[in-house]
Image (cartoon, rainbow, N blue to C red; front, side, top):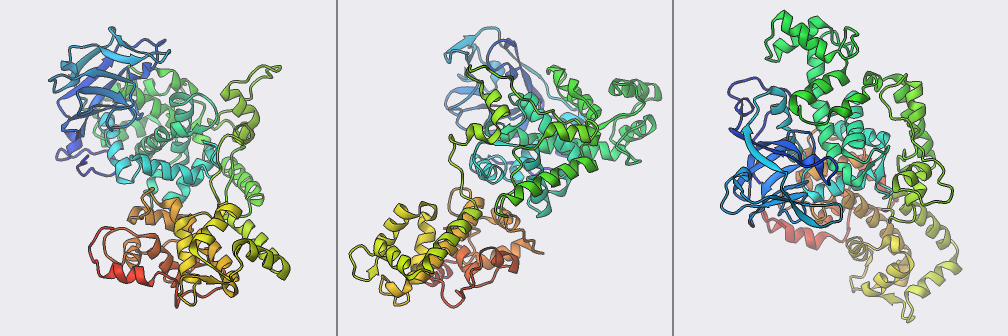
Length: 586
C-alpha cells in the first residue's frame, strides 16, 4: 500500500488540496437485515486515495474500521483489515469487474449458524462520492493512522500489549487516558490527540456502538478505539475553532462566524435553522456532543442514530472531579503494584459520574444475581472484574516481576549454603564450569521468568571473564546479576518491538516514552544506536547503548544495578561487524 501525503488534522479548505477534490464514485451497500449477522456493512464506502492489489479501495463513511477491497484472487470483500481477504464479513465474486457494483453474483455472508449463504436482498450501487467537508475530514483518518503506525496488526498488537499490561484483554477509560497522555507527552502521537472531551466520546462510541455495550474496551475493539480517538480529536479541533470564547459552548453568533470561517456559507436564516437542528435541548448553546451528533448525521445520515441518544453533557469530562478521581485511583493502584504499573481496571465510573455532575460517564453496570445459573460473558466481567479472566489469560511480564524475583534470589545468595545449593543445581556434573546450554536449561527449569534467549546470550557473553566459552564457579554471582540486567533490557526492547526483533525510529520513540525520558532530537539519538545506518536497531546495539551509558540518565537509572559494564559488555564483536556493513538492512 502506498499512501500519498495528507495534510494535518485541520479541515482543508484550499482548492489545491487533494481533499478538496472528491473521487468520482463511492459504493453504497444496503439491504442487509438488522436481524441478520453483520448488519453494519450497510454503509456508503468512499474511495480511498490508495489502491489495494492494483484495484480501487473503499472505506466506510461511518467512522469504523470497515473496508471494501479486491483480494487479488477473484473477490471483492468487506472486512475489518485490508489484507488478503481470508477473513471477512461478506464477499462477492469479482469476475472481470473493475468495481464491486459491476458484479452480477449476489453477495455472500456468514450467517448466525456460521454457514456462508448468498443474500439476494443486498444491493450494491455506485453513488457520487461526497464533497462534504466533514466526509473529507473523515477520509484523512486512515492516512493519519498509517502515519503513526496504527494500521498493521503487529503495531496494534504491540501497542495493545503496552496498554493491557495484565493481559486480561479488557482496559478501562483511565488506562486509555493514561496511554494518550504518555504518547502525546513524549511526541509519539501529536499533541492535539490529548483532549478529554474527545477521548470521552471515543470511549463511549467504542463501547456502546462499536463494541458489545459493556464498560470496557476489549482487544477486538482496539482498532475501532484508535480510529475514534483520532476522529473525535479532529472534531474537537473543529469545535474549538468555532468556540471563540473558549467556554466549551457555542452560541448562535459563534456558530455563524465559525461555519463561515470553515467554508460553509449560510444566510442568517439558514444559520438559525441549522443551529436549531444542532441545539437539541433548546438551551441556546451547542455542546461538543451535540456538534458530534450533527456531524455524524452529515457524514452518514443513513446510519442508526440511536447512539446520539446518549448525549448527557460530555463537556464535564475534563473537570476537576474527573481528574481527581483518576489521580486517586492511580495512586491507589500504584501503591499496590510495586511502583511500576498503573492499574485502573476497577475504576468506579458510577462514582465518577456522580461527582462530576454527569460528565457523560457510563454508570457501573453489574449483572443481576443469576441464582446459580451460568452468567453471560458480559455479566461475569461486570460482576467479577479482573477475577473473571484471571485464570484464562497469560499475564505478560512486568518490570516489577523481575524486581521481586531479583530481590528473592539476592536474599538467598547472601547465605553461602543456599548459594552453593543453587550452583550445584546448575553445575549438576560437578566440574565447576557450566556451558551456555547448561545455563539455558537451568533458567528454563528454575526461573522461567528469565527465559529470553537474546538476554541469555548477552548475559553469557558479558559474564565470561576467561573467554573460554564457560562460566566458572567464581563468576556465578556475576551471572545472576547479568541475568536480571539483560532481561530487564529485553523487556523494554520487547515492549516496543513490532515482533521482528528490530526497532525503528517510531518504535524508539515508544522506548523513550516507556522509560519516561524525552530528548531534544529523537532522530539524532536514534543514530547513536544505529551503528550500520540501516534504520533499524538490533538488541545487541540496544544493550551496548545502555551498558556504555550512552543513553540519557533517566534510562540508565531504570535498570541500573551498580555494576560497570562500560568497558566490556559482550557486544563488541557484533558491533564491529555492524560497522563494516554501513547502509545494510539487518
